[in-house]
Image 1 (cartoon, rainbow, N blue to C red):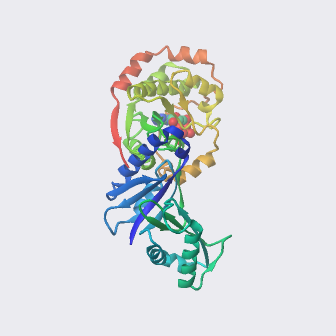
Image 2: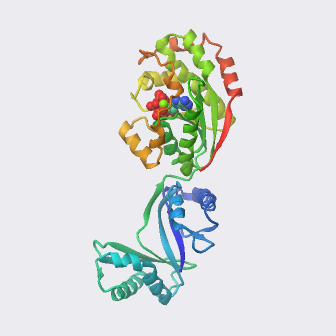
Image 3: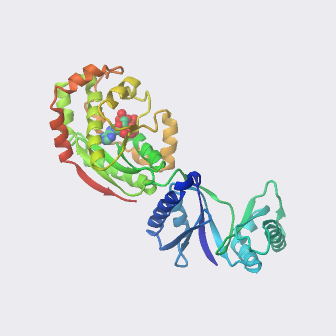
Length: 390
Ligand code: ATP
Ligand code: MG
């Protein structure tokens, strides 16, 4: 019996004339991912994508897990491929679903016939398959309102498919359809979630991480790499730019008012990230900030940070509580890495009393006492690039 995975696209079904280009990107993303596991045929017909391994005896659980992390997919389900005649459909249904049907008490059959030349109508197919399964599995009752399992039969142009319940996909739109953006990534809980959230909206990511050795360690950087690897299971591969930040932080510490230290540091982060973003053809910056979470994330502080750069800054977590952010970080499996105790450059030289209502004019004045352009040039010149892949 040949098995396949049937995929229904999500929001891209609403894209009108652009739909084809969204579908093409999605198919490319699916191919790239599943082919890392086993070579598969990926084809689309009537807005359903079928992923079929060329070889037999492959690990479908692994393929399913991979598919569950691809954005642009509303639902997916394993299905058995039958020939387009009732005899084949009935025997496949019996064999393919036997294990599940033996474990449940009630079922119903739903059918879809996109090949209108098939001799039976959808209700006729359902009736025949339902009657047959009820006979073959006499403990089962047909329950059209609240069945334990809905058996679906889809008769398409090139084959018939029999499947049980569909699973929820990752949603969103395919990565690569939304352009490129830079994610400012720390080792914390929030920024990996912000990265995931924006990849979900179709953005390809480039990561920028600020490191301040010897105040921050190599293990802290390795932690960020591991976080990004988790994110890349959803977002696809990306590059990580590690920016040497020690000199800038020391200059701020030695020359700027202590209460403005964090805000000036964050302006540098935005400026350097913007430089990298423009080099990499990225149209926005992404951060994991959430309003009011810390002193540098008040409305006034964010205003002072934003003023330092011209690109749009996406803050997908801005209105979320920590609990909501943690829930996503558990779901995408970054939480346990995020809570490993390594210092971030943001936690070195933190002022005792950071300004929560900084005045832009004074912040800019204080920052401009430093050789800003020179410091930025030097930092950008010395970035280290790491390839991240899932
Ligand atoms: P996170 O859990 O993401 O570390 P946080 O609540 O600790 O967030 P901050 O440390 O104030 O918040 O940082 C806010 C945002 O600034 C982060 O979400 C991230 O986007 C960016 N950021 C912080 N530290 C770094 C860093 N070392 N390198 C790159 N970006 C950083
Ligand atoms: Mg942080």
